[in-house]
Image 1: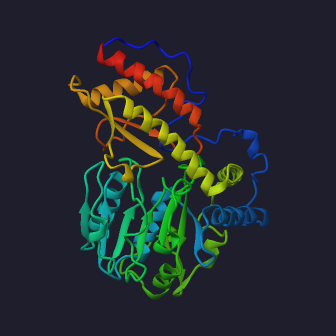
Image 2 (image 1 turned 60 degrees about the horizontal axis):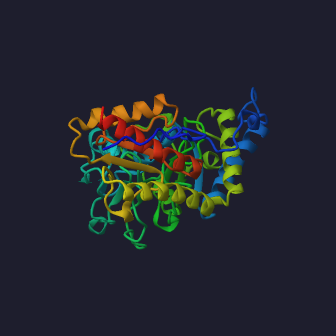
Image 3 (image 1 turned 30 degrees about the vertical axis):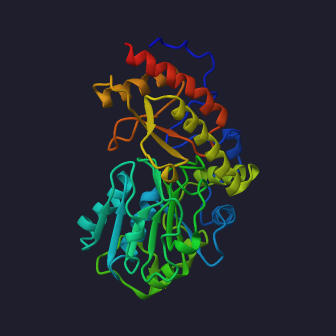
Amino acid sequence: MSIPAQPAIKPANPRFSSGPCAKNPTYTLDALSDAPLGRSHRAAIGKAKLKAAIETTRDALEIPADYKIGIVPASDTGAMEMAMWSLLGARPVEMLAWESFGAGWVTDVVKQLKLDAKVTVADYGQIVDLNAVDFNADVVFTWNGTTSGVRVPNGDFIPANRQGLTICDATSAAFAMDLPWDKLDVTTFSWQKVLGGEAAHGMLILSPRAVERLESYTPPWPLPKIFRLTKGGKLIDGIFSGATINTPSMLAVEDYLVALDWAKSVGGLKGMIARADANTAVIEAFVMEHDWIEFLAEDPALRSNTSVCLKFTDSRIIDGAGFAKAVAKRLEDAGVAYDIGAYRDAPAGLRIWCGGTVETADVQALMPWLDWVFNAEINA
């Protein structure tokens, strides 16, 4: 096989990392000049910024008015841990996992909380039988498998008359997929994913059913201060109006507000979904035209439109992990694509972020380079 000519055009922005993700295309540090640095987050200006972050999130994601939205520490991980430690134990628990982070939640529930949970696991690229899930139990799952490229197709599998709570890690889904809020009781995400915000802050979204659980159930284990959502049997409402549990970075808050404004400028949620879909469509067309690469998620209905995971299928490849690392390194060395190797626990391959902050023209520019590097490595 002849090696194609080295492409002449590189992506204008080679940042395709799956987290932290690319800043929006119009981003500059000057946009953060209004951040109230050196001011208390409990001062009027700090509270106003935090409240704006919460309510703008509500508007952007079309979250119902009776749902609570809180800014919490430790990114999506902190939000998920807070939810699980505060809510689980009242009912049977069913854990669903089809990628690394979902497997992490299983470990926390089974080995740390020591709950006798039912655990259902699928291989990378697959998903569990969603129609077999018992929603009389509290169900914990990821909406989008950031490390496997597999997403839940829709919320139809979740019954409206469920007895248990649904606890959903949506960190690489929020702002890129249509989340059915009436089916989700607890939803979490982080700023550094689809909006390309700064790390270390998470969002915790609670339905009225989740609030009712918090106010009627006390878990049998001790709760660290940063996990406590109630006081005297009542929800600490300030957490959901801008009075954060710990001190937030007002610079990161400003960055998040800038990201939300940009999302609004491209059509809000629908616009962000359309951008991610357009980016993924470029890769879909490329995969269809090349027989040496495939999606890790074989079923098109289950493929993520943000964390797009690919595998090499050429029979000449002896060391799959080594080959994938060599391809990713060569692309990075050329300044074409940064941080696109598969997640360390996932099968060998590539993971290309296609969320809404990525320009479709950059994905288009990357594809010829992927072809060139593959052929260069396979013929080396």
